[in-house]
Image (cartoon, rainbow, N blue to C red; front, side):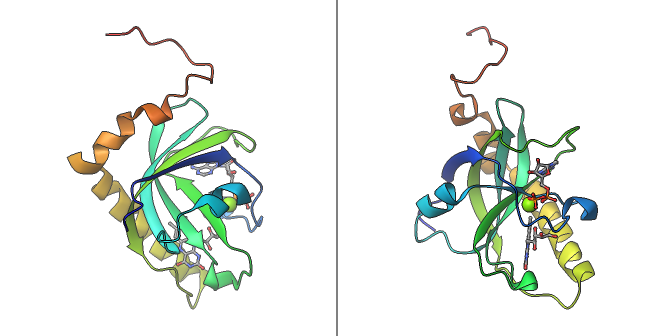
Length: 157
Ligand code: ADP
Ligand code: RBF
Ligand code: MG
């Protein structure tokens, strides 16, 4: 995929409200405007990369781009599960991400438990990939340090 790494950001919107959170896998949904900008060669499927809420820390993430066949959705979505425990929800905040690699195609499952197992596998896969120097480097990128968001100033080296 020639468009990877792909950088984007958008305000977190309400998703389908299926209670992914109750399953322990909340997904922050990106708005339509971000979805529309995606280059054509970024296929639907499951990806890994880095994500940051507002001007907070940069965390590992897994995401799904697509139609959620398990739920027979008719609407395409981009949903990011950040591999970190947050104290509070962050609807309306700016989520910045870099998509680095493809994990697998989206698919249907016989049960919700099978979907959850697959996502846990994705999380393990993403986590080990992102520890590789090749991918870890992106965590430090300036893209995640927006000058227009308030943050503690970092003394210049
Ligand atoms: P929705 O259907 O509205 O997307 P979810 O059950 O998927 O609802 O929950 C998503 C929301 O949970 C996010 O918009 C965010 O505010 C919050 N959230 C808390 N922790 C995380 C996390 N680790 N990754 C993604 N979203 C999280
Ligand atoms: N939905 C599917 O229908 N099929 C999938 O293969 C699938 N894989 C996912 C992988 C990841 C890493 C994430 C974050 C979501 C995935 N989803 C998939 C979307 C899932 O249906 C959605 O987040 C639900 O709302 C979870 O309960
Ligand atoms: Mg969601």
